Length: 120
Figure 1 (tube, helix red, strand yellow):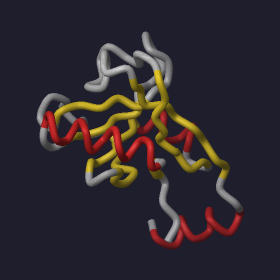
Figure 2 (cartoon, one colour):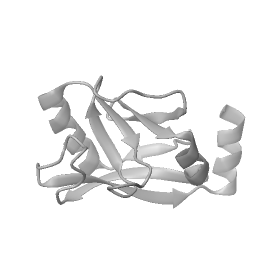
Figure 3 (cartoon, rainbow, N blue to C red):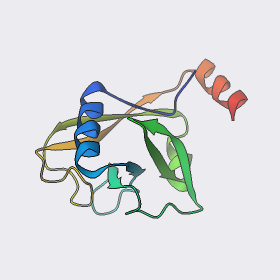
Figure 4 (tube, one colour):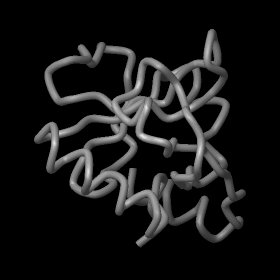
């Protein structure tokens, strides 16, 4: 099964730490304003998902949303959520932890795009 969003082991470890501290989480792919285009992590309930947001999937049991305009831009790629050393976005829960979530991309193959179209 082709997934539109996945997380690396390092990202999953950071998600687990944040879940232990904050409970249920939610991710939203930012639109590229102040902090660039980064995955933002929120405590569930602290971010209002809008009618124009699309659920791409789950990473570490946390739902991952993206605004439809961003989705149109990224729909031919798999979003890979990774973690690395750094401060990250001050809007995201991991800010100040010394780690940050980062977005990496991989283009889907023609076969994967077909598979996604048949399951949508």
